[in-house]
Length: 599
Ligand SMILES: [Zn+2]
Picture (tube, helix red, strand yellow):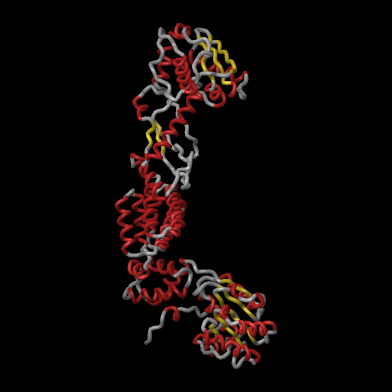
């Protein structure tokens, strides 16, 4: 028994055998069943998607001895002869082969004669765009006055090369590329029927390599069967195709997840030694990340079609959704970079490093990527407003998930300073307050200070209070009061002008006074009376202020932290490596503090 290549053996014989192209088949079936036939059909699409297969089945439908229908019997003389390519009234012309182009005119000259045995004379012209201009003229003449017994089935990969006069006389059907899934399923049915053992992942490798062409897929499957000596395995198919096996792509994501740089390098070496197609590799990586993202949303939505379901689900659990999205974005951008690079391998390896460096996980494990703003502050238990500020860096060129909250300095609820403000100072507040400066007019412009406020011992009853002490006292106090909303905002924009046993005088920054009302004044008074537990008179004057208000202080702290983050980002060795490798530049203001470590 002679071996018949799969592509021929498994060529669909009926419309229902076809994989895909439902949109075309439905229209044809409807036309056949209702006997509404056109005299010229044009099938377009890339190679191997089923253009001539559909045309041949269509010819059977027209000429089956059982009558015109969408379900030819497959047994009559016409059906069997068409299947075997020797039906006299199906005239197949391959316009791509030059010798036959000359014959075309001759063939078309015979168009007037009635079919010899069939119902219709069917002209199937493949790669019709290759016809000579003489042939086109002959064809056009026929299409203008088609004899009733003639039907033209034209096929082309390149409809744009057809004269508009021809196009306008055809019913056009554009066939789609087959999806890898469709191809893989069809290959599976073939192997099951042929009783050939296989690995599912191997079929996906073939399906992807076939790039939408079922004919190519079947040809590749044929090669794989002989290459693999009967058992179609993924590793052997990958080696045959020069495509990366899925295990390798999985290994990349697993190495990233484990922050395993040496492992990643090993994979890069393996890839390099096997001369894989880097674009295909990257496409497979993107496809895997897509599967992981789906698994995070709908774990049940992942089938085992590629034999990696459990691994995908495990990665979906271990990686955060943000990580997966970031990887995907970097890989997608990398695809573009790779097409520009003179060496795809280098571009791919750079991409792997970028994935590792910018994994959202990396900063926690690499000291260099953590920015501890002003480590000295850690040692200052009474610093009051900030403990440790940690900044995790995200380059603006990569659309990393941005945190929703703006950088914000969390007030430490009960700092020592706040406690002392309540416990130590207050008993002697009357004496201390007598030494408070009456006005701030002669205070140097404290807002221009670049040094953080000195966090000294809280003022003691008999110490003389400087303007700085007053500022510090007030900032600490406002922070400890923890008043929110507009009232809190107004309070933070006040400075303390004077204070004695019975009264407190505040100045509200006039630039921030638009929201101020008597009601807010009352609330501020209540807050202070409650805090000091005495019936204080609270006066609030709206004026230009010359001291640092708590709001100014917070803003300054934030700016300083951001500046430190920016400097640390610029000095980070990974960042510097990227900048020099890619001639990158850091966008101004793109560094953001996205996380505040809690004390
Ligand atoms: Zn038949």
